[in-house]
Image 1 (tube, rainbow, N blue to C red):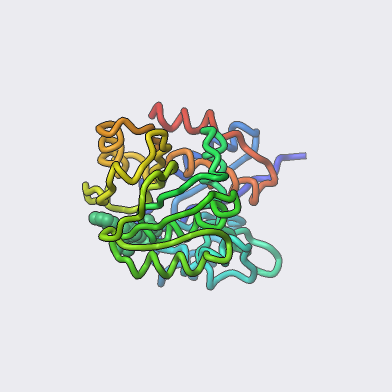
Image 2: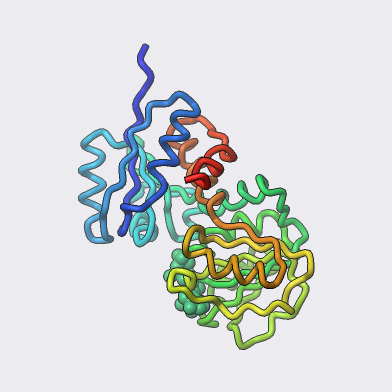
Length: 272
Ligand code: ATR
């Protein structure tokens, strides 16, 4: 009996530099699963047609990245709780009644926290930024029962809105940078896209405990300014490469039913 071949893809714009094809090929090699994984360029308006063409060509699973995560939600016949909460899907699986949508971003972060030995339970968490990435992580984060979560964002209104939306899941507040969030946060999550423009959000060291764990949802060049800020303030800091691999592992599991190990893949990506 021949092994099934999984035809998978990541859709996005831009998508050429996506690490997803490499990550999923490494998972396939690790588990002896035949994976055909491509990167397909598509904007929001092109997504329905491109996805349909992929399906008729035998495609059974897809990742969606920027700017397609909200648009993808509308193409699904069913979505999981994480996708509903985040109002975004990053993973699609073809079933007989259509595409089923999932959001593995938040669970991917928690999976990476577990890998790094960071337990959010009972922690005082400061999240910088209140965009789509934060909407994706809040549900799984709050399920781990931190003592409190404070969102601080350049646009205060966005932080208020997101905090209100997740208030039923735990103690969470949102505000702008001009407000003082207090001090002694012991888990810092940097989620803004400021690093893509070579900028840093206005984080203050006195908001943070001495033993704070700092985690940036960004990796690569977009992580460098925050990494430097952490070094200057003698903070332990992790980039978001492990979260990327973590969310991919959960998507791979949805598509194939097999769970890949993430550690080796994170190391392989780091070594180039
Ligand atoms: P993502 O899906 O990556 O979260 P997004 O939804 O566009 O992308 O959100 C980007 C986040 O980075 C927002 O919190 C944004 O702040 P605003 O809501 O005020 O726009 C934040 N951000 C981007 N550039 C920033 C900068 N230079 N300084 C501080 N925050 C910034």
